[in-house]
Length: 111
Length: 110
Image 1 (spheres, rainbow over the protein chains, first blue to last red):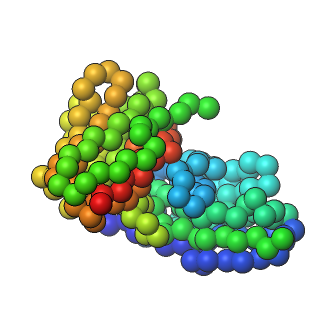
Image 2: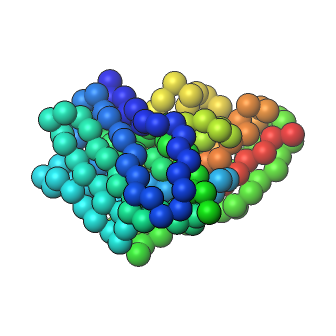
Image 3: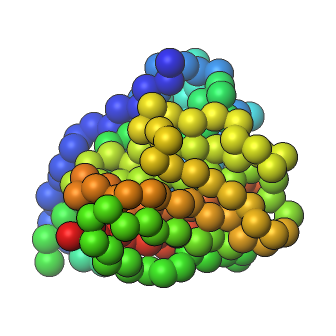
């Protein structure tokens, strides 16, 4: 059974710092991995999708990496801004086709 | 970018009433999902739908819940006899080569 773990559960950093969010998954037989952003009380916004054949994807100040063999992904945020404050969720497809989410990392960027 | 649309954005209902949450998935997608997120908790899988039938459902998705694709575009989640603990954000998703989620319906049962 696929399980997704995200560390840390919460993180506060001063504005301008670079930071890394971690995601691990127990079943490496995935065909992609997605990172989502969720603002309080709001929906899920897809940030990056990494296919299993890729090692990383970049979008602006965001860079996501994927190491299938070790069951890990990281989301790197460069030059953090207060507007980056949100919960970041990692999600992978399960063998049975459903999408499985981690509990997320609550990020707070201090102005 | 394509969008999954959910209506209403917020629904308040009395305990015991039935609610229908509506979703318009992305038109050329074949897989559809409902998820829920109780306040402060994880996003939980409820049900997946493929080829006009349920492909998988979680233990949460009991007889109180049903899904339907009444026409070629809408995908609905019906919750019968709502309970206080059904209060949550409900997300619809559709998938082609990647999953797209709607903005959610916040259901409040009072």
